[in-house]
Amino acid sequence: MKRNNFSAVNKVVQTPPVVKQPKRGLCPSLTQTHVLSVLLDWGTLPHHVILQIFQYLPLIDRARASSVCRRWNEVFHIPDLWRKFEFELNQSATSYFKSTHPDLIQQIIKRHAAHLQYVSFKVDSSTESAEAACDILSQLVNCSIQTLGLISTAKPSFMNVPKSHFVSALTVVFVNSKSLSSIKIEDTPVDDPSLKILVANNSDTLRLLKMSSCPHVSSDGILCVADHCQGLKELALNYYILSDELLLALSSETHVNLEHLRIDVVSENPGQVKFHSIKKHSWDALIKHSPGVNIVMYFFLYEEEFEMFFREETPVTHLYFGRSVSRTILGRIGLHCPRLIELVVCANGLQPLDSELICIAKHCKNLTALGLSECEVSCSAFIEFVRLCGRRLTQLSIMEEVLVPDDNYTPDEVHAEVSKHLGRVWFPDVMPIW
Image (tube, rainbow, N blue to C red; front, side, top):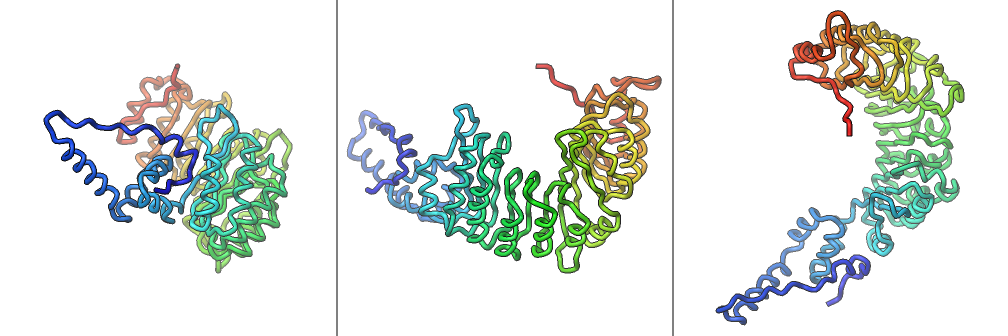
């Protein structure tokens, strides 16, 4: 019987079979007949039944099962089992995930490249792993991929790959797939010319594009995508390529309603980047066209770099501040962000945020989630904030050290008052001590 040629996988499964000894007093020939009939029953299961079983098994177990008999090996190669695959690539012995074996990669490229539809590459921090991912991409010439994701589990290793090598490999998929609907290529050296190739071959099918931290893409490059991919519903990008022209393109009559817009606002050093402003009429046009869009903004700025933000109404729905943010900016948010749903402040400094939080509670009528850490709020002001928001606050994550005792309440007394206004039991979060 011809065995599957996954040599590396089969080495794992080539263990001597355990032979069950017949019980005393039973006829050996009857026992052997029974065992043989059981084996024949399993071997003659219909393809669709075996396929259903295989779909619940991890790849390594499917590979082992494929060595049982010819029929199971045939099911192992049915295209339905190869529509979704994640290539895991690493070079470090300390990596927490196992790398996909090279023999298996070659088998997939030779026999199943045309069946792949949902593909992701998970690489560690080494340049070698990212280059290996590019080598695989460049061989997917007969693919019909719909979803492509490039994931760096540590530092963005794709940025260390020569730009020409990365773009050449990515272009192979862009040209040959012609049905890409979802692309996640963040922290990569993708550039404007490769985006034009993407648009030329997949403009009718593209629905999601995540490309934050792609320094070789300009505002013109992303504008080209918005102009031609009228079905785009989700977009993630850096603030530096966000423009009034882009928002207006996403608001055109021929464009579908945008559902999710994520904007990363990042700088590495204070004063390194001078941030531009987006005009109110551009935001208004987007909201008029896509009234239900979620606009998510992640800020990783120093306090002096916030000057251009939130000076006028901004339709952001989710705000995350990864570094310290001033009281002035939080005050602007209360006045100019009426669509705000979620607010997370990771740091603020030593000045209590009492008046700013109360202002947000009064003006941000859609707010349902708040997270506070490494900042200060008096217990009375926090209780007043919760009272104003009421039971619409479905998520409330406040570190215990944020709450400052005052004349009316101590931190130990806060939970009872907050629980009363929320209509459920609530306690502040506590930093674990290991």
